Amino acid sequence: MRLTGKCKVDFEKWRISKKDSYLKHCFFEELMPSMRYGVYLDFFDSVGMMIELQLHVNPTMQGGSFKCIRPAIFSDGRFHNVGASFGTRERARAASIKKANEIYNLK
Image (tube, one colour):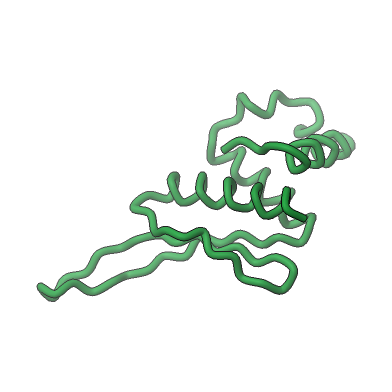
């Protein structure tokens, strides 16, 4: 989960702008991945991009079911498909940040 290009530059400006905030003074890369994800969500929310992880339960032919997590990104009034389902929240989080970074850099 690393930002690149214009997104990375704008994220750093946003992070530094947080007056009297832990974010302004911390070493961001030393945060646990789940904490970094939350900070990324706050940044993307601030620029009008909403990221969700949606749990889907799919039936199987044998009468059981399996669960998967699908990231969804909403920006500029549009839904952006991340393009995959994931078996773990960690993988879904990483994919959603990667896709949000791509979308942001295309603006």
